[in-house]
Length: 351
Ligand SMILES: Cc1ncc(COP(=O)(O)O)c(C=O)c1O
Image: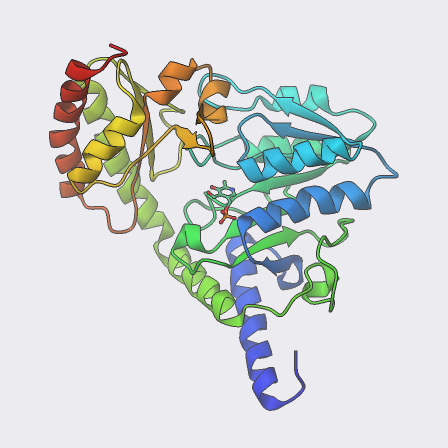
């Protein structure tokens, strides 16, 4: 922000980066606010809109499969006197746009629905939900941390008013993200200070991180179409192979309406943690549906929301694909995973 030439050089890099990030989502550069994380963007969207529009109403709608930073922000807002509706999802994790329509009332100020869920990969009908919100005159926010750079997004076509995106989910650096805020949306900052980022996010900007974010956007723009086709093919081979080779295995999430890089299963009679440990020994990094909280092993709220019982959620495994995943990696997983499950079932106390 300094007037000297060194400062101005950084400012030019910042504004060029803003144009590149805005371009990938079909927004105007002045609608992109850089933040430090998707968590911060989601907090700003929910709390910022809630407090700026308090006079209009106090009702906010979210889904029951949002990321914890939306779930927890909503819980906190409830304590401040806001009313939160958490919409149920079907067995695939899909929100029904009709449920959104029915839940909107006079006091509703914001609907926030995740674009694609980070655990089960299900892609929500964002365009339809956005259309409903537009017709009803209610702001619509989507957490697109998992989709930006992976599948096409256009904030105008999809009727989005606010959108969270993150650099490190698309091969950019950690510690940088953004919130799209449509021109005219009433929102309050949650960080007060020097008035950076059009007054919405005070604090010295992370220029290096933002330039890296823009570079990641450029690469994704160029590669997205080809890469998503390649990953979808590999993902489907993985899903088909696992379901065919392992009895008592089930897919979590939607078979088609899902992120190209996400596969999530639950296996009867085994625990996710044991699978993850066994796979790690074989050089495969995977994750399970339980988040190890400080004291107890909690089953994922997302898996419970799609109707899994706690023991089924504990038997879940998420395998993510990426830019460096090759067909031979899928073949390797398909070779070793059936043996791992078989071995664990033989010694499993739950079986
Ligand atoms: C959908 C979604 N939203 C928000 C976040 C939070 O991102 P961060 O931890 O980088 O703030 C994540 C991270 O896993 C995510 O997947």
